[in-house]
Image 1: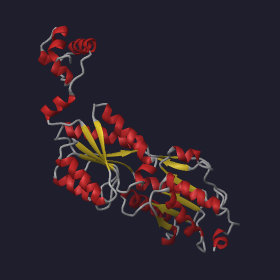
Image 2 (image 1 turned 90 degrees about the vertical axis):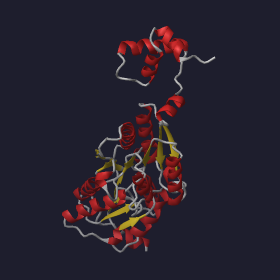
Image 3 (image 1 turned 180 degrees about the vertical axis):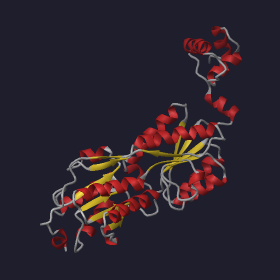
Length: 350
């Protein structure tokens, strides 16, 4: 038979209501009494029935996670397992579970979120991406449902709690790093223009070129999915130009891996023929050949702060809106050097 609160109360020599308050971690109970009750619970093997408690408080103790639409992009890119680790740690600290939602299209993602909210399956939602025009955000705002965004909102920035890097500055610094080697023809391979992270990184890249008095060329900017294959198509296009770039800013390590594979196929050497800086600093960047210089954006911390701040919002409806900016830094490895003026790559590929 299951152990009851009354039995715990009798062993700890307190009232049953005190045991309930200890389970709810009430600040009104002294630490000494909490320890005595917890010891009694351990002795008797008592485990609180969270479902019953949650039913009474109208809380599920569950956070909803919304992945970007597409059946495979999210799960292939190492950014997501790392950000999920951070989210999970922040949730576990407060005994919250996670429920993941995804869909093959934006409509499917929206439908899944509506089910989460209407079915009262979760207490709050974390969006793991930020689109330029996002119906999920509009819906959550309409419903006044607690949510946190990983990334920068396209609209209403002051009204939406979000955790982000300063992506404009990060891309500006990555581009300036290449300029410091003497590169003047610098290409950019980024993800979809619908993603705010791409919009910001392009802005930073262009800002650095402008500040250095370098030409901003549309043919040097290519947009693909954040997938390994995405980088491969982009490379052939760039390298076949009459004046190909001597350096690349690639918006994601996973994509940069595809870039390296394609360059190897084309007989282009990194860094002697072409320098590369990418983003995220996942393990792949270190294991790549050559190891990639990459902007570390503290992915784990992005996730950890998202769940931590969502729980604060869930537990206090008057919590003010926050903009949390997570720091970044360039991790230097072996993928950058001075430009090689004697090499004519484009001519060889046409």
